[in-house]
Image (tube, rainbow, N blue to C red; front, side, top):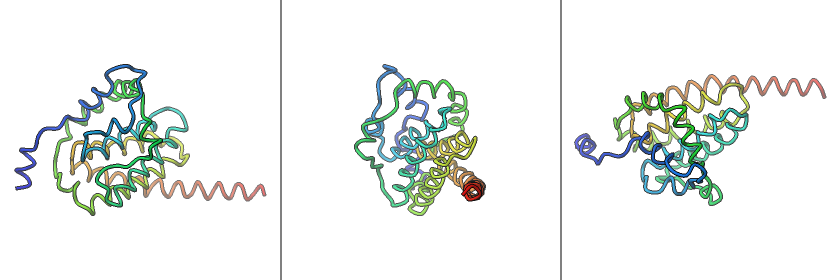
Length: 210
């Protein structure tokens, strides 16, 4: 019966449709995160993660430092089992300009189109499973932590991984979520060791000068 219910569920607009709607309008208008999440219900975490990931694609060193803490906050809420994202007021009142969303859409539209052609609601029950939600939250927290660290040339990589999680949550695609888990855990294992080595080398370098 869950399969039948899933087939007859009302069709929800895809990620590209949502992004097109958000990017249309006054380019100088700021879209508050509170307004962006309104009415998205179970997909709100996916949209928040999508927006939180955008600074990672800005070609400046601070991009990861902006995205990382937000991703950690999202992951922590999934880990403890929240059904709707919570944001402090000073963050909820902020958000991206329409022009930033339009620029992202122009730059990554071909990739999003190809990916969205493969993404669809599958194994949606997996995304409602408590253990699966906790795993998603834990992986997001660790990826957010790595994104916050000054590891050279990794912002785009972590950003792409986080977009997989965001699309899986937005499109209710359990198969894509499994792929995101595997890719995320591999990245955590590889770059976790790398960041540990970098930290150890930095400490040794500072100790040699003291």
